[in-house]
Image 1 (cartoon, rainbow, N blue to C red):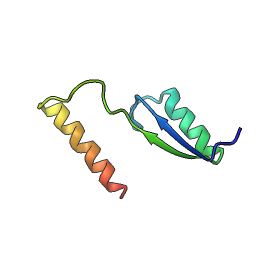
Image 2 (image 1 turned 60 degrees about the horizontal axis):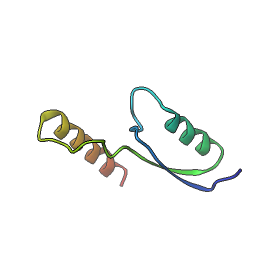
Image 3 (image 1 turned 180 degrees about the vertical axis):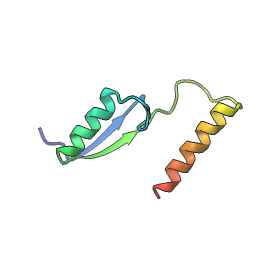
Image 4 (image 1 turned 135 degrees about the horizontal axis):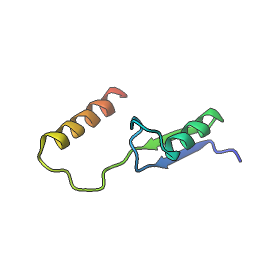
Amino acid sequence: MNFKNVILISTADWDAPYLTNKQHTAKLLAKRGSRVLYVESAGLRKPSVNRKDIKRLWERLKKGLSSI
């Protein structure tokens, strides 16, 4: 099967410390010539105003803007 464009919606961030099947699948499809858009986890809960959530939001914003 040949997929030219793939959108993979994941529950795991791309740079998570341990790869999941989602990252492995995305890498395999890309290796076989597909263009893969990997959509990271939006989160499973509403963010709070605390140091951890603010840092995560800031890091994701920086990472997203750096690819523009």
